[in-house]
Length: 243
Image (cartoon, rainbow, N blue to C red; front, side):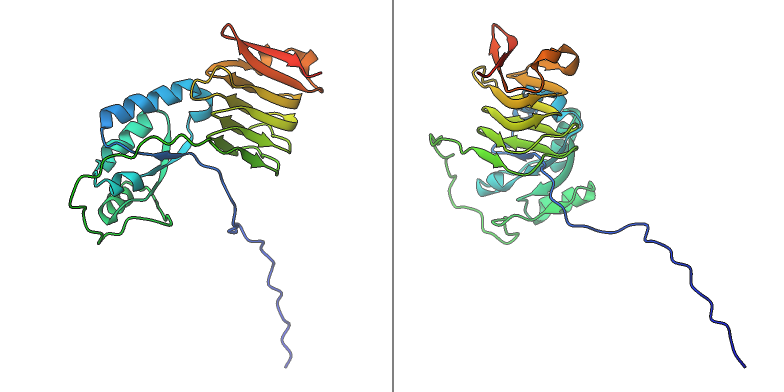
């Protein structure tokens, strides 16, 4: 007696996991004074509101724990959210801090030199380190910056590929894009009025230097398809051909 085999219909998977890399700003705390943290965080957000609006953020407590300074995780989270940022992770926390973060549905990120839950408290108060005077390194990006990516550089930022629409690049120093610049570019974000933006083809949604910005509607069509530099003069953004 023969039996006809039934073919099982093929259903493509509805999802899959893939490894990927995302650039997320990290808030490194060196003080547990919540009032100071809130004030300084709001000041930084005001310098580049378009970059920080609804931005994911990881807060780093490693330096606080090195100095044996505790902090209210719930209050810190509220401050971050009030500033328009979205806390998505904690890094450098001890066991109790990580537990409190998880209770607030904030994931724990590992760090190479994370604080051990059993680490002993220092016998004496360690004074804060003296400010460092070394130069800040330049950040070099060789791959295209895709839509949705956010890149922050503490010095100059050099990008050798195109910056796509919907991407955001941000630097405390100058920005160099040796390709088409779409998306948003913010230079001198810590208030440096001497910072500049250089690009081979300006098609940006927004450009900003030290908090002074222009959107795409304000950019002249004549500046596209050729190398330009952007700098600040009398609180106005100047776009000039590079000859």
